[in-house]
Length: 595
Image (cartoon, rainbow, N blue to C red; front, side, top):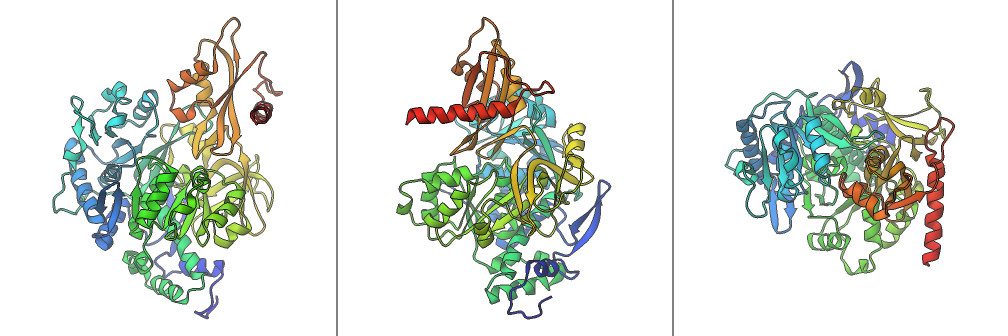
């Protein structure tokens, strides 16, 4: 290893330094469900330790800003402690599931903290879901209680009887419904800052987050305390690597002193030695990109989060200007909208230090445009899944500019990435296959879905359903998907789920759903339909039908009616490759005509 402290280290040297035996980030082996993994030896036991860490080291600092409300870490801790005690008084026990469905209000943060701190499991329902989807989520998870904001309560009424202990409403709009609690009454704070001392096993369940895949119904991804904690520490290593490979000698020496502190350094907030981040939260907390990389990472970083009622590019720029935000993350759709605002130059964005993205592929032209329109910021992109606690690969800085179509290298030190063929053979550099990831961050299972679990999680490896290759210098490139899903503006959508709904329409004989490219959203939902003989339906009829069963983002943007049977492949399955090619051609012709 390079012994000159004045010389930046190589990536391999940094990883060796970070994980040495006397480092706070030292690695050891642990058996989880019969599989051996690398783990952080000195990691906190559970997420409650994360919450307490932030209160101890950043208590009086601003944590949450929402419109004209400003909450410190200590205020959040006291209210979360009060809410945790209320959950126990309501009858919530360790392992019980508690659902959350609301906007990114401060109350969402309180709910997550309180649920996890008492050893219960937070079920983060998609807040765009309609009644039918909410009923599925509550039934599938077995949630006993729910926190809901008032504007979503109507969607819970049909399934409210399934909640054994009832529900509490946040931010009521008028009178409370009968037999529903006011959430604010449950977190009336005192001076108490200590969560109930309930024993939490590090491998116990903490979250059930629903994600769409190639199957019909969304799957509940079960994430444990160890998995989440490991993910947060692994993400923090990105910054450690960057500093140790950087040119600032003082910063390098400071990080090396922290690493030399051993296990004790795990309770030393190294983030306090660097300029504090102030971040816009523009992704829903029911996504790992919102909950993990925005909220959970803030507890050890002392980061201030600015919450918004809903995404709006103009409003985002106003907040960056007014609050001197230092970081802007989001799906490429959001950042594309910011870049294309004609009045971008009217806002003071000089406080921005970094811009990152994930959730979907970013067009390479966005990278060039970001550099041109918002220079002097650190740019990056990440690749991960709900099933991997958001982690996977990351690409930052000059390496990102050099390889704008790559999602980067496996995030050190815990993530392993391999490319495998259909026969499970590990492929070499530049060979395309399925992206597989192994780490202690991986999900425990899909809730109530053993078959789907065994298909996706095998011997500790997550089979992502994404296709890609790794270059000879270790950079991951995503080339497509093996699974039948659409990624619309960062939202995963199962084609089969929409097809099942379409076939409920009395006029539909055959229906196939696939993606079509879109400049703003990346992909849109496209449905090709053959109607029954002597039946009729309009595009609006089809869209209205789907909207009555599924969230609005799953409604097909484009619908095409065919006069003959949908094309088949040799096995008899619908030929979606041909349908997608035909759809793209139709959209191109339409675009030319409109010009």
